[in-house]
Structures are given as C-alpha cells and as structure tokens.
Figure 1 (tube, helix red, strand yellow):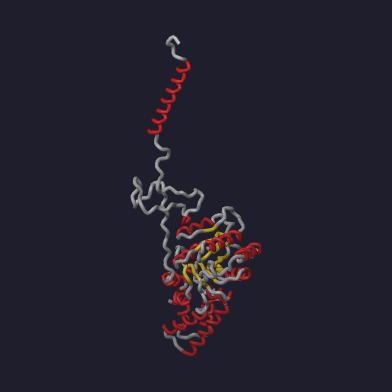
Figure 2 (figure 1 turned 90 degrees about the vertical axis):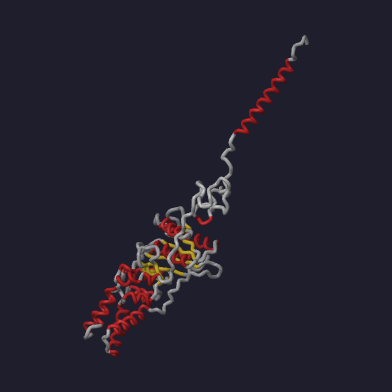
Length: 396
C-alpha cells in the first residue's frame, strides 16, 4: 500500500516488544532478589507456637548435629533459649542427722535441765516437781509428762544411781518411749493400682504450707520419683506462682488455674487427672491456708478431698503445723482431724523453739505420727522425722 506499513502490524510489533522487555526485567529481578526470610534454620520449631514444649520450660531442644553456617557444638544459636539448669536436691538419707546440731541447740535447755535435775545428790519431791514443770514448759503435754516422771522416779529408786552416764541413758530410754519409735512414719508415695499416690497438704495460714509442699517435692525428687504439683490455693494470688517456682527449680510441673479465686476442688481434680495421664509417681495438692474456726473454709477442704476421691484415693493427708505455736497447734490439729483423715504431721520451725515436746503431745492427741520436720529456711531443710535422732538431739 504505497510502501506504507500496515497500522495493525505496527501495533502487534509494539505489543511483542513490550512483552519481551517486561519478561526480561522480571527475570532480572528474580535472580537478584534475596529470598524472603533467608534459609530455614535447622533449629526452627515445626510446632505451633501454642503447643506445649517438652519439659514445660518453653525451650527448644538442640539437635545432635551442627548445620553448616550455624553456631558450634558448644554455643547455642542466638535465637534459641537454653533451658535453666535444674537443681539437685540433697539426698534424703541423713538429713536429720546433718541438721541435728540445729535441733540440739534449740532444745538444749530441755535436755540439760533434765540431766541437771536427775544428777543431784538428793532427788526429793521438789526435784520431781521441777522435772515435771520442765517437761510441761517444753509442751510435752500433761499425760506424757506424768508418765515420764513416774517411769524415771521408779527407775531412780530401784537402781539408786547418780552416775551421769547412767542417768543420761535412763532419760534417753524414757524419752524415746514417749516419742514412740514404733509409729509408722513412712510416706505413702508409691504408685499403686496403675495410678499415682495422692498427697493432700493442709494447714492454717502462716505455717509455711506452700513452702513445705515445695520442699517435699525436692525430697521426692531426691528419691527419683516423678512428681506433679496441684496449686489448689486459689485465694492467695501469689500461692500458685510460688508453688510453680518451687517446681521449676527441680523440673516438676504444676497444674494451676489462670483465674484467681477459681474453684480449688476443680484445680485439685484436674491435677490428679493430669497425674494419672502422665503416669506420675506422686501428685501433691497444696490447699489454701484456713482458720480452724471458719466452718465454711473447713467444709470446702472436705469438698476438695471428696472431689479428688471421685477418681483416686487420697493416700496421705499431711497437716502442717508451726512448732513455735505450742499448744495452740493442738487445737488446730483437732479441728482439721474432724474434717479430713489426717495421716501425718509436718512440724515446721522446729529449730526455732525449745518446745520440742510438741512432737509427743500432737502424736498423743491425734494418734498419728510426725512424719517430717522443718529445721531451717534452706530449700533442703525438710527431713523425715526419726525418733532416735530427735531424742539424741535433745539430750546430747
């Protein structure tokens, strides 16, 4: 057409040129752009962020090998937290022996006073009254004190000795008799019938109950038991956090509610259920401290125990008492015994009082043994009670 280019052909050529140039630009960008986010880290988790992490400490386990371009075998990658090192609780065996010095210092007045009275040249009626008074001041209780005085009076009259070592031996034998070494002080913490042992810990406010649960967890861990804690003290804001902290130090998980004031019985039930599911050896339930004269609170404690028993028997009910409260602890113990079947006593702060006789008085009143004693503020200052070590600490 007179040598002129067809307009349609021109349009087609332009479109093709644009497509070729655009494709070249796209290819250039793709070859020069850095992949978004870089290469996938060999340490990256494939779990959902809300999934529970093994060990309950919110960390990722480091793979056995070291990927190219990552940190060496002794250095964790910068984006990976390292799990805190778990504490190793002190061995259970010999704890009371190791702590006997504290106990003997706190009870030295009782032991030395009795030995001094029994070693006098003449032991008349006035001396026996002083001995009885010394025992009563040590919170031994009226009946045990009278029993001990009568036994000593008879032995001194029959043997007629004032020789210090013999007097000391007689005193030791009679004290041991009233402390009663025949009582079963074993903690029932063994799995049975395909489920964990369940330990319920109760007590009034201020006795160190939650701390005692944490320390007892350490005792059980030292015995190579798998432990799970239940924070059923839902009324004190810091109680669950305090208990969880105790557990984390030795790798023990805690079942707790995120709702302050939640139903304690529900938390206790969930803890036992979790213990059954993970095949724990022991589930320990910490309950709220309560005043023994508050009927509503005591009824609620009974509810906690009944709720647990819907799926598992309660193997131990430990009552935590402050040894420094003396005879007031007797009243507390009697009320708790009416609500739940107490199987053992934990006496805290025994190193801070010269009234070690409370051990005898409480056992006599309840008919249950003292199973554990607290002898200090340290994490491993809770020890199984041993009658012979206790008496030796008093009179040494």
